[in-house]
Length: 131
Image 1: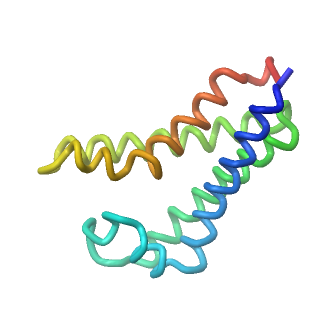
Image 2 (image 1 turned 90 degrees about the vertical axis):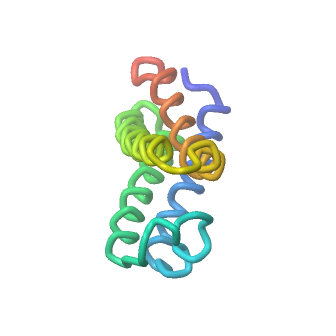
């Protein structure tokens, strides 16, 4: 049985991930300008920001589905966690290849690594069979 804290955590993740995705989709330039380090990655590309925003929105919807109906939503949570984990892996690689790896990791810790680790841990430890 899924405990209430699992559903609450998933609901909070849904709000954070989905909210980020919506801002990326509908206010791409403002998102690009506001997120520390993003402008240093290259010139603004609205299409690219919206593409990634769509993926964040889908990850947020997967977390929301799990929060609402854990048994049915587990696969959606897991799929969103997989995207977020691959995205975090790209950030690890880029940090390792950069001039200031530890500063890059610290800058991305909450917005990239933590927001990938939490849904991944939920998906791994609250498998469909446990829901």
